[in-house]
Image 1 (cartoon, rainbow, N blue to C red):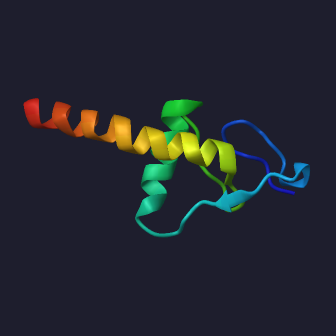
Image 2: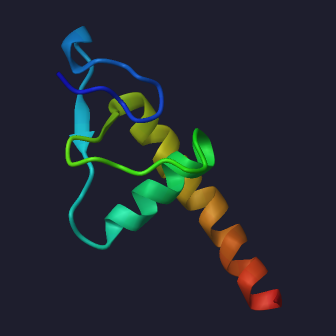
Image 3: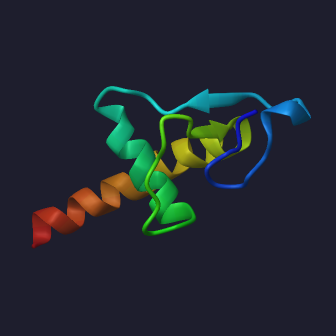
Length: 75
């Protein structure tokens, strides 16, 4: 049974979950969980996001990431 890293939804509740990627996208997923829920959170090998939180993650990625990049350019 997998629990969503953000909302604690269970995969047994009929909710689809996605494992954290092993490639360079992993850093983005971790940053999203930290920004959306817990600032000091670190994933385990079994960490997942539910389908609802994954949509929130995608929205965060496309709205907040450009803002962070602009801040870095100004600094």
